[in-house]
Length: 122
Image (cartoon, rainbow, N blue to C red):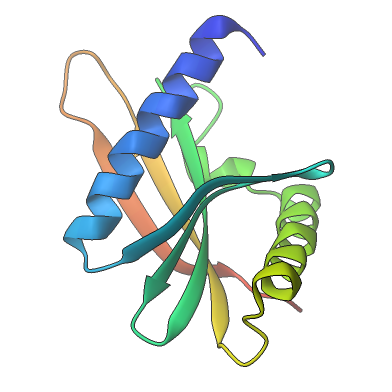
């Protein structure tokens, strides 16, 4: 990853956290890392434990940001979420995966889209 890619990603994560708070989410953790990957944001939305993947791009040249959450990425996120649940003891909590898709364009305001239940454990 380039320095610019990392900077864009971090800016997106900050924007996503603010956006989610505005929607009533309570942020529990950010950048939960394991050797096999990372979950950008872990939050609570009502009774749900929500694992949020943030995808940020500067253009649609390679498609919408959320399109980068492919099957391989979903499998990785599920594995990390299972570790989080086991580590933190959230076994009895309903959980879901949301995606925050952000398009950062210097000429326009950021476009932030929330996709609830972006994918499931199945």
